Image 1 (cartoon, rainbow, N blue to C red):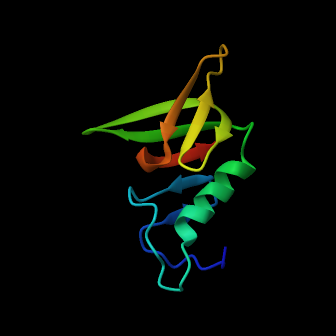
Image 2: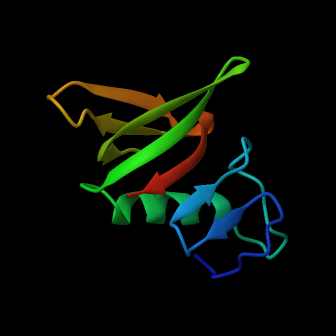
Length: 101
C-alpha cells in the first residue's frame, strides 16, 4: 500500500469508523498503485472478530447486516450472527459501507 488516499471514490471518516466505498473497488488513484482494494482489505482484515454493520448492494436494494466480521477473502467477506453461529458470505464488490461498533 502506497499510502495515497486521494481517490475521490473513497471516503474514510475515522471519527465514527464508517467506511464508505465505491461499487468499483478496483479504481486506481493515479499514483500507479491500486490503493482502494488493498486499503479495504487491510481495514477488514484488521477488524476480524469485531462487531460491524455492513450495507450491501443487492440489485436495486441496499441490504444492511450486523454481525461479527469472521473472515475476509480475496473477493468476499463473512459475517457471523450475533445470536448464533449462522453466517452470511458476500462478495466484496457488493459492499457499500461498513461501520465497526
